[in-house]
Image (cartoon, rainbow, N blue to C red):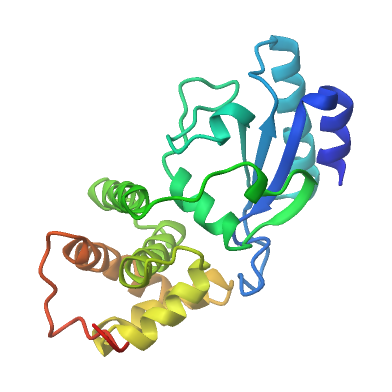
Amino acid sequence: MRLRDELIALLGDDLVAIWGHGGTVAMEGPRTSADLDTYVIVRRSIDDAATRQAIEGIHDAIAGQSGIEWDAWYVTEDDARRPEAPPHAFRTDRRDTSWAIHRAHWLAGRYAQVHGREPAEVVPAPSWSELETDLDRELEHLERHVLNGDVDSYEATYAILNGSRILRTLMTRDAGISKRSAGEWALEHLTARWHAAIRAAVRTYDGEASSEDTYLIASEMAPFVAMVRERLPGRTPRTADWQPRWSGY
């Protein structure tokens, strides 16, 4: 892999691990190319401006040639071993606010090993309270898009499928699932009120959306996100809309 080879040449032994994750590496991911997410663990903070510039250049070149959207995070090994949300290794104004969810995915095997140590050798298992905090942050992110009127097909699809994943995690305490699989789960556990929007979001995620799908998910984004908010701890589910179908609930 080009990224691995160029980072080894640049960082040497300071490169601890590279993990690929997200829709691109999911077995049940989208049928079209998805965004690429990469997590890089380094031995120490990258303070040298020339090294930071070289890393940015590597990512820009690979993304440009591949035609992909690429979200890459760099975190020091010491920070990766802590439960607190880690800062970026050379963008100190950024912090991973989905750290518990990322750890849950990696420790459930939802990643591609590119280089170095496995996640289980580095990151701690998340507690349920940490996952709840991250789920709330993710929902706040969706709510901001609704508030700002960001209802294009990308944001609406993300809101409906990630909202489904939030619900599924709340009900099962298992965050290790893709957005597409979360949509399929929601079709089994949410009432018919939401089925058309979920199916439209899955088709859009797969690159198979019709104009009707685009309109539907845009119009349903806000009510779907509001429904998810009502299901978070402290809210009473409306049984008319919410029908869990697992034993023991």
